[in-house]
Image (tube, rainbow, N blue to C red; front, side):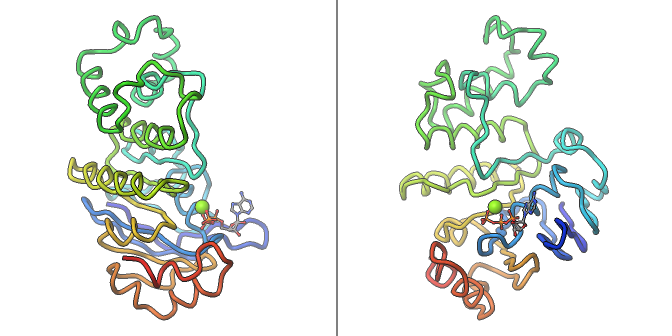
Length: 258
Ligand SMILES: Nc1ncnc2c1ncn2[C@@H]1O[C@H](COP(=O)(O)OP(=O)(O)OP(=O)(O)O)[C@@H](O)[C@H]1O
Ligand SMILES: [Mg+2]
């Protein structure tokens, strides 16, 4: 479903990503891990078209995506979340979801006069389900800016799902979450996959990565240093070295895991 070949991004002298080859099969949850600054977010930004690649190709469903704008890739079925939460703070929870399914022009034309008149019945039902799934059913009319941190993360996840993607790129969705919230998130990620969405998960929280993914690629300094099942990756010496060789916050994470 997603095929990266020789994908590279250079910022001046910094090779943020350096010749990444990677294949994600339809229907799988694929993990992309690596120490801080190893190129994970850069890979996501290249896949969804926020950055233009310095070299290499991004193929999605057999179609070359190079040169296509983010909104074109979204229309093709690629959605993402951000490492730092990016909601529309002055829109309600419900409106944040609705925007994901409508062009800005539609949204402006309808002026949010009424959430119920503005949306079709199908959309209403679908968004209500997503709200329930995100455990935000009771918060639909709350402004996004009034939500607690964990709720904002859940809303961002629901909003990405609302775009009805075929491939969802998650950039550290568990950052700052409690243990219980991480467990719930794991269930949501699996649920989404079971509904037919392929998932690329970038994450430092090893219990989550090791618990939900089928295949993992490990980056270090922009290069893939390992690939395999969660068990294989955890046993990989190069991976253990890469993690132990970096700064405190993630040391040993790959070795401990599940
Ligand atoms: N817009 C940019 N301009 C210059 N350098 C950048 C830019 N974006 C990323 N980099 C550099 O590219 C490298 C990879 O960064 P990237 O954000 O992809 O890492 P990451 O694996 O997502 O790290 P983290 O786990 O901390 O989120 C880093 O050295 C970073 O400083
Ligand atoms: Mg990152």
